[in-house]
Image (cartoon, rainbow, N blue to C red):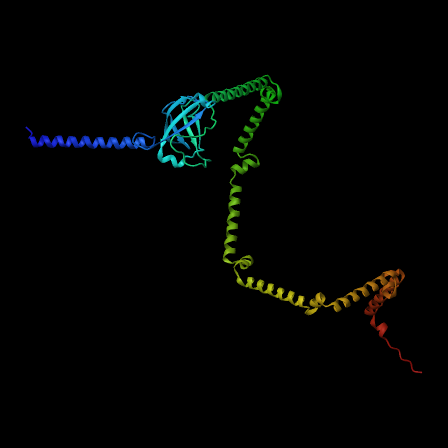
Length: 358
């Protein structure tokens, strides 16, 4: 049998366990009730007045920006507050008071189309001071369940009208009216579609068998081999260029071409600078007015001379304009040529010298 000491120790352990469990339960109740204004937390009582309770019941949640902060405690009728005769009393956790304002708008919202009603407080645009105990919040208009049902009925009516129009359209198509109706109900169109499908099948079969240009492209490996060979050649050319082989490769890899090009650019820049400073013939052409005037006079004299030639003045003008002078000159040249030919053929005839002694 257990001793008296062991029995007392067992009873003590049971008592300690019961006390610990009771303390845990009390702490849990305190934590659970803190967010909803329970008996162990500091609470803030607020009121608002609306025209219609919209199915709101006691115990319904109170939310601030969709976060639950309390519950509804009373819903009653106050006739002297006409037209907003429904008084809603709420308790919220005091820790949320800093997020509330005296101009925060309270409204009754629905959790879905057929869900329960709850109080929603909106402080997004509120700027008033923090509300006190039993403060009254302004109410905001909110759609009732009847408004939701009425809107749903309007939507259903529109859907019904749309369905009726679709039914009329389908009936019209089935009767063969309109372009789509003729396409759907015309046997000729169906035959054409069938013929097109047959032709496409014939073409694809020919391509698969390697017939025609497309068939050769699909089946014959010659084009692929040529393309592959061309790519190999291009790859070799690119490799040669990268290695600096050939003229193009030297242009890419040889620094002398760059240096020569840079030198040519420097010389061109120097030449342009000398021209701008008036040095050399080109510089005088660009900068010296006297040289430009002389050049202009020369051009004018040449122009005058050419005009005289065109007018038939002087020897050159006669040669250019007088046909008879040209013909005589041509005849003289022809005779001179004949004389030269005769001289070459028989030079003794023309070089014989006769000496007579008187």
